Length: 150
Image (cartoon, rainbow, N blue to C red):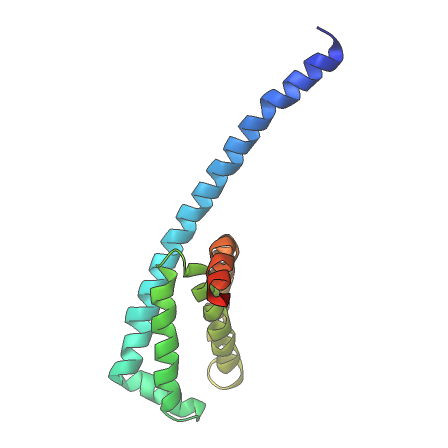
């Protein structure tokens, strides 16, 4: 066997290993993101949206501090609830995460400019996770958007 044939055989033999390793890394990433999605969805729904809908005193007080009226409490709660549900539906997770990035940007700006600047780090951290989810689910998001264009 010539040196050239031997090299081609060696390169071909290593490709499947790389593909398997990459596939395994992707599956691990997806599992980690699923865990984060479930935790964030539970937080958004139970700890953030429901208190807004129920009129919990601190939710009402926070919206009063912002000064835009209580309609903002209901709107924010609805966006959080919809985003939380979307995060746990595989086909919608990327689009939900993308929408939640916008919500987190608004929350971070509100914390910085109106409420408590130190708390702006929490929505920024959430937005980073949502960006990872949106990136990971980009193929599903494209598919859903294509179906909506029809």
